[in-house]
Length: 101
Image 1 (cartoon, rainbow, N blue to C red):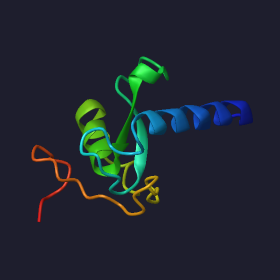
Image 2: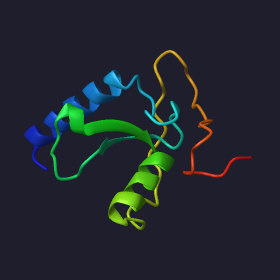
Image 3: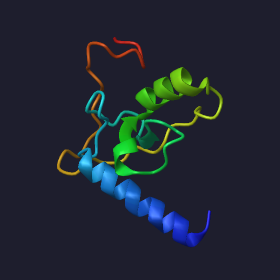
Image 4: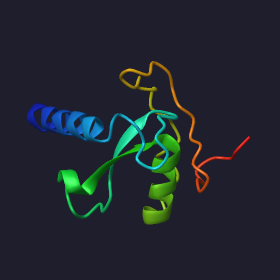
């Protein structure tokens, strides 16, 4: 990735995180760090095709959409949510990304 492309992606990532309030759009949490995910991998980097997902929901999406399991073994470093100061755990009732206690 060239420096220009990297800075373009960093700006896009920052914009999508801001739009999605620095939280997973599925559960509202930041468990395992946040990914900017392509809703449809073939439709590019438009804001409408990008969303913020926590690590468990990103893994779930990639497994379902692409059959990907091996490249998503490492979690991202947690990113602090502005104004909260701690990680949130997913508590959505329909979540299948991780087991409930």
